[in-house]
Length: 334
Image 1 (spheres, rainbow, N blue to C red):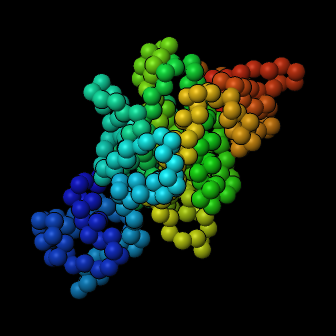
Image 2 (cartoon, rainbow, N blue to C red):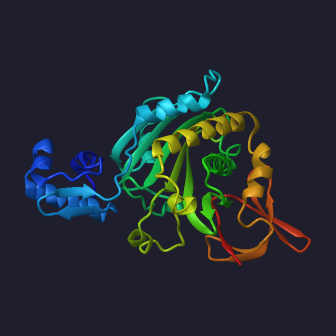
């Protein structure tokens, strides 16, 4: 488990140089033994450290830590002075239970429209249907965005799909080719999961409502961590290739937020319909035979015909068509 003390030490090591245990202990106000223990905890969280007697410690792959000011500056540059673009307030924390949970806790006290909360480490990150979300400090990008809609839950049924389009657009613009979408809320590369989306709602059935949009992306996922995940996964570093430069997570987050703000602004006016064709074009299983696993254990088979204007998945079984709502089923290749 990484703690604020752990992040304080990691920031001292972020330059990639060796630092003695004595110097680290003096800078953060710990004993050398405690420094050693905290850095062992960092290794268990997926960070690779090198220890050399007489030299000290260094990070083998020093992460570029997230910085709210850097994200804001890059976001402003991407907008190119477009004053009509939705305004966002970016916050970065070292540790939180869940960025989405934290934003939901704020709803009764203040407006979270346009508030972005990104975290280096989530102690209780979660994915769809309550599954845990595995993230690596410095090797993942996990954030949530609050957005106010005048409409209710029915209008927002396709929101996770539209968010998927936004994320896929931003990744493609940043040079990550071959990223596809998997209904209803996954991002995949060659059928391996690279990211996920979780939408949580607060408000009246008929509106207005506040959506908390959670996004998680694997940036650099060590092999030992992948072995502990019971599903095929990959990361953006693998997608980019060995010769690609180190991934600037601050710039990547800014690109994602710029695209998300534009898509959410359009969705608030027009719903999911304008995004349906693009979503289908990006769907990893479009036109392919699949089996759908229902929550009650039943299995439905058919060919993916696409999605309708509400974001429901449409399966074809000969001349028959059946639609399935997001959040009720899982999709697997037949």
